[in-house]
Length: 247
Image (cartoon, rainbow, N blue to C red):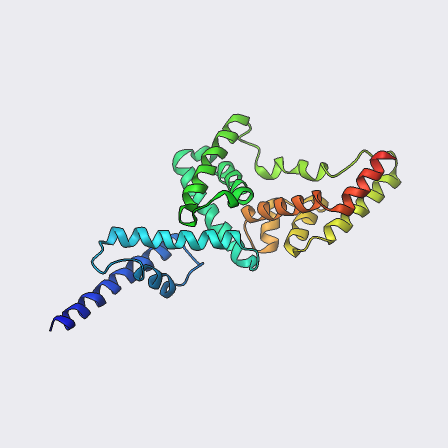
């Protein structure tokens, strides 16, 4: 009799846990973990008499770890892109609740900071707290510049200019453009290559590029940031620019 009662209690708790997990997945549009997998993670780490608030907290904890792992890995670009998309939504909501007029700029800047400094997050379960810290830093930076109207896509226009050199002739310009195109072609990620070409050679906005690539403007900025970092460290391009500058 006692065994049947325990089984019934366990089944009821499993159902409560599943309902909580499902509601959070639907509310936040989580896509990195399936419902069954997330339920199993929670059930393995909680006692059967735990209150709903505890179950909810553990559900968010396990998903935060999955988000951290997806953002940090590079083997699955689509999964990483989805992770940064979800992180951007989280940061934007947090920013909008505090500073609605600066929410977009602060969230985008924070996303770049997280991408640059993710290795500094030592506890995967505290990844969202780490990201919120970057959001506060980003807000201070955005507010301090007093350039609220200027989006990140506009400020990033100077990135490509940092690779250029002064031209003394049309031939110089052609050679530099060719060297830059070759460096772009060496980028290992096709989306990074398209992002650079569509932005700087075809003049498309981040919103238009996002529509072309089937992603978000936030992910376009992340892709471009990664691409620019690779271009600025391209040995062949650096050698060409040094030779041209010394000549």
